[in-house]
Image (cartoon, rainbow, N blue to C red; front, top):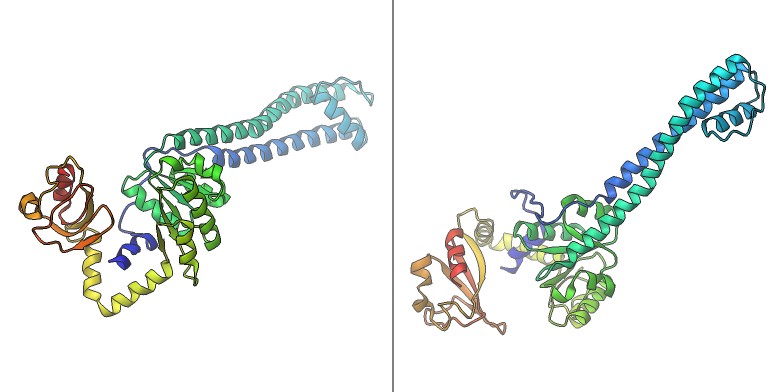
Length: 363
């Protein structure tokens, strides 16, 4: 069962469409930076063209030197008015008028575009970051995903598909651009930094997933997160190196997952129990019209303190109770019909999705 569930974290399901987070909007910082760079290059090329046009015009009309022609061009298009360095003929004066009308307007336009590229891009980037910080500040009962690598991408996709709120913490520019393109909430910085975790509303979070590439970084993230929120559920990634899992658990991780171990276990299970694995895969991916879900029992639910047979879950909802997880962590597999349902139990049920949703409302 564990090996099959881990597939959801290590292998994206290509049959499911990519779903964008409805609450998030793409910040403008990255596109603004690229657009600003293009404006800057075009403006500089236009300025260079005007300077060449004026300089060589004076050189041809007045037989001026390159330096005198360039100087006359600059003081003309900037309207400085230091005086003529060369005696102008009538043709030279007509050319100066044309250069003044053409160059002064072009120069103002160029400086306007340069200012827009440099100032507006920076302002939009700053406003984008502030806007994102405000959105993250509204999160509660959410997940914090530390690292947007291969595993982090799949986790974010599945959280989005299941409409679970989350925020990503990442510090690599290329990964940040991908996060922005997906429309996810994100914070730029080191996930082991207490200030970044506080900004991610760790005190209101439901859980934290540490999936950066380095085991040492995952240990530091776990230590920081556990210190800031002693009751937080922390899921940490391990590379499988000997002793890493123990260190992560000591640091405060609630669960430690090694993708390499899970992948090897799954491959072995496919060899020795192919039919069982195929059935669980079909169930997990809802290809048989069935789904395996977990449902929490509210203390106000009508099934509280009733046995399974008294609750009428099987005849009324046509669902199979595969297991019951007690509030203190005890797991009861294939519970007996006389097993009593207690408040805050988690029921592992198998059945049609619509029936599961009906039971979820009742619980």
